[in-house]
Image (cartoon, rainbow, N blue to C red):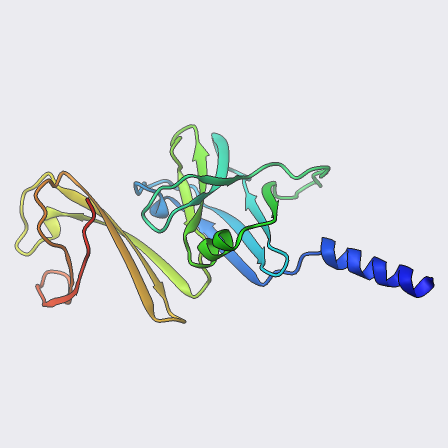
Length: 218
């Protein structure tokens, strides 16, 4: 009987436990927001995934976040906006200690296979909404530390030679050094007759050959 009780206890502890198989340490900034903004706000988040038990745990620090409204985990790749998957909430039954940084959490059980794949593929992001920028002032794509994200603005002044135009664009690039893969998305504004878009070789102020032909959506 004692052996049976011990086995049942071990099973229950295993079923209720959490063991992260993937951990993401993120910095939210306006440079990843869509559209890009120049906000000086920056904060941290930690996302952990237990693939075996299909559980998600996330923590978002909100100390010093002026005008905070709410925060979510959204679906969507770099440079995209998507629907809300989960909402960050105050931790239950937690008593804040003096000097402790305040944070919000997501605790979700029973993730589907598709949800876990979307998360691991970098197709989820954290978005923090404020009164100043209700659509999201700072954001972080949920990607591993081996992935570097760079955002940039494009306009006619950078052309060689420069051109006067009302068209502009905002680009988001993710480079995974472990897999040696690059993902680039450029959102354009004020362009109705685009015929092609490329990644070229060439330094600032010079023109170079086409390296990659970019696909255009509608």
